[in-house]
Length: 73
Image (tube, rainbow, N blue to C red; front, top):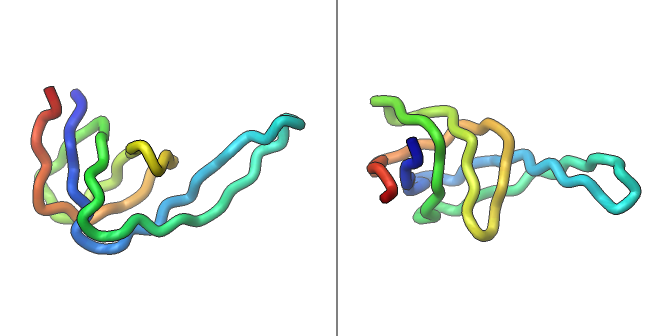
């Protein structure tokens, strides 16, 4: 199920991108507080590992602190 999650503290995200030559590069990006993410998964805890993305960020698994996690319809 898809959920919307608000980041409540800065989260480090490793972004993997494939360039035109086929090689994969990784870089660390920091998501600022207040960013809304769409995620798969849910857990009743303040720190949860998600696969997350929005218009600015896509990522592998990362840990984010949340206060608001609700289904996205």
